[in-house]
Every structure is written in structure tokens, then in C-alpha cells.
Image (cartoon, rainbow, N blue to C red; front, side, top):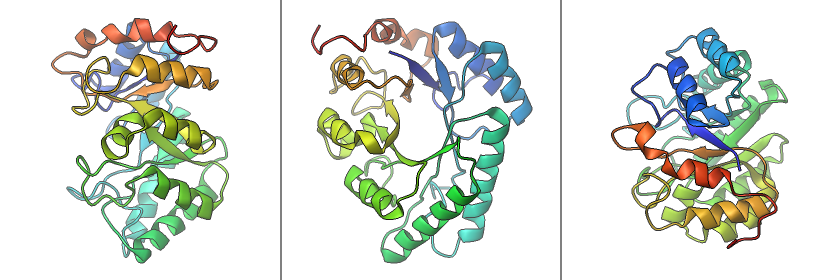
Length: 260
């Protein structure tokens, strides 16, 4: 299996280009990030070229303190679309393959309409080779966030009915809110654009906690998923000391039957 280092949590003591090199040295197959905008895109792109790692994803900005995104906020359309424009420009320069469009804290029909309208705007101006992602966040870490469950995300994607808009399936968020991580993943697979993971319930190292990730990874491999899975976990004091899970997980084969 292949894995992507989420540099929003891993090697955060280093500048983004240095973190990309650290991910390569650790054996990751790709990288992704949260908000890379303080690093000039040319510097990020140079590190990606030097390491040969692809950048799988980045986020639109969060907005004001505590907002966690702008896309579903009625009356904030100009800011939301500026955030989308910024993310697309950075993604084009760095050849990033996906953008997570953060919804923000909102609820109700007007928020839904705003979210869908802004996603239509994003898809209309975004290059075809960049996927737009929406992600349900759990109610414990992101109270009042607009997008809360995989069922809600699936219904929105069905209503939107646009190619290149997919669901970010974060096993951690699904486990904390809904459970049945593998069952839901199998059912939603055609809608999923990226998969992430972390220990439950503390979002720590994935070989700890309530979810048995070796089983989850085996099931994902058996489905024929070949793209890197996003390691979006909190590593503790030092990222390098948290990577004991990685080598064992990379040995899981697509042809392996679960439990082998």
C-alpha cells in the first residue's frame, strides 16, 4: 500500500520544503498539507520536484478564527470564492491533485444553497485534473460544522452531480461520528476521492486506539484502491518516532486477503 504524509500534522517544526524532504526520507509515497500559503508555491514545487513526491491535497483557508471554512456561510460568498481562487492558483503551480473545500460552521437550507453554489463556482473555474473534495467532520472536534456525516455528503454530491467533486473519507472522523468505517467506505467507494486516517479517539498514531487499522488497510487494498492513503494524525513530540506503523502497513498487498 502507499501512504501520504499530511504535513499539517507531521514535521510541523520544519518549513514546508524541509518537511517534504523529511517525508521522502521516511518512506512516504506522497504528501498533502492543510494551508501552505505562507510558503511561496515555487519553493514548494522545487521540493516536490527534488523528492519526486506528488502533492495530493491542500485546503481552502479557514476564514476568521474558529470559522473552519467559508464555503457554506451565507453572505460571505466573495471571501469564499477568493479562498477558492487562492487554492486553485496554488494547486496549479504545485501540481496538487485535489483541493479540500472547507465548508465552515453553518446550518439550514440557506447554508446548503450557498455551499452548493460555491462548489459550482469552484468546479467551473478549476482545471479538470484537480479534484474538489468535501469532508464530513466529527461533532467532537468540529462542533457546528456544516458537513457532519457521510450520508449528508453523499446526498450533496448526488444533488450537485458534477464530475470531479468527491468526498474526503477520513476514517478518524467517520469512526468518531458514525462507526462502521469499513462498511461505509465500501458503500461510498464510487464517491470517494481521498482516504485519510488517524487513531480513534485521540487522533494519534494509527497503531493505537479503537480502530484496528491493519484490518482497515487490508480491506481497502482488497477493494483495488491504489492511491496513497493520507496519514493525518498527531504524532506527539517527534514525527520520526511515530512511524513504526509505516513499514508494516506498506507491505500489505492488493492481492492479500483480509486477515493474512
